[in-house]
Length: 79
Image (cartoon, rainbow, N blue to C red):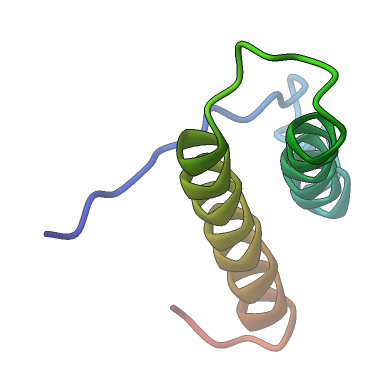
């Protein structure tokens, strides 16, 4: 089953994107990485290791999709 995620973009009145895609993909990867470190160090006993791993993988996949779409856009290709 393929599920699509639509991300709202923050643009100004001229349509200029106000948040860089690279910042969004970096944020997604950073959040996942921090969750994993919390699980590894045992700092938050409420986090389920399997759930955190699954969520981290999904965040990384979404970040990858953003990166690929931006590369395709900048090279004039469509995804």
